[in-house]
Image (tube, rainbow, N blue to C red):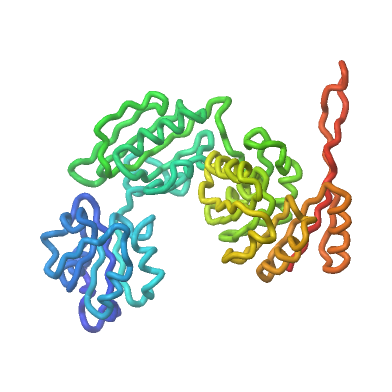
Length: 413
């Protein structure tokens, strides 16, 4: 069957000025005839130095290595000319394609992906991609791997450089996953391809190629720091000074806040940051801002966020409501765990909530409880009394020891 020419005047592609071509380590030889034609016909070809070298024999226009970090304006300045952007593998898998798509309409582009590093790694290992956790650690915090570390899971991770696999193996060993098999897949799809493996706690692979993917077959020791999927993680996993929304109350609170993909939470009077952290664990798209007046607690929140694999949690050192008066993005949900009785706090968070936003306020003192009763009378919502008792030693016997009851007011704007 003849290959369609994307540059013919009667094709839709002729009206598209930007082509995004995925290229692998096999270079120009691995490109389809259509992809080759797009590179050759371009007035200007953007790409990393490695990409431009791989496609050098096809580039007839001007070759422009992109700056680091990639600047979209460099491409947009040539709108109307035939422009080609070279990208690694699939441009829409942690690649430049998704960045350009925010600025260029789909009808102005033609995208021809190549197999991604994830595709190639899964093919070498015989893993099904839909059953594999995929994460990019390229120029990002290694702690992002932590939520993926479930017993028996398969994980594929992109790293930043030749030191990334060893650093990742050390992290695994430090938190109880030392028996996990770590496979390093280097320069996949090209003449320098190499695949090697070692247990995380005995990782000794040297001279790793900077272009690599790490595959992890997760094995958890009995004391491994496994983050359960359900809300209400054990209190012992959090570093705290007692200012912590306890496990059972936290689970109910998160249910009331009803996390939805891509939403933003304000955690006011965050203490140890437990609610904000579990909010972010609900989905990689979740965002949260923790507001905490005490600098020691704010520092503790940052440590907890790293330990739970959500280093993107934003922590603001300051006291509400003054700390809420800046240029903070409007929240979809707000939790007030401390300081609800301070003047102006509830008015500030109610005013900030987006339409349809959810508010949950917890109180343990009679004074704050009375305030919540008044708010419910004025605005509606629901009041719930939560009490928990735990079995503890009473002399030589065992009895129930009640925790302080919590009054929770929930309200939807």
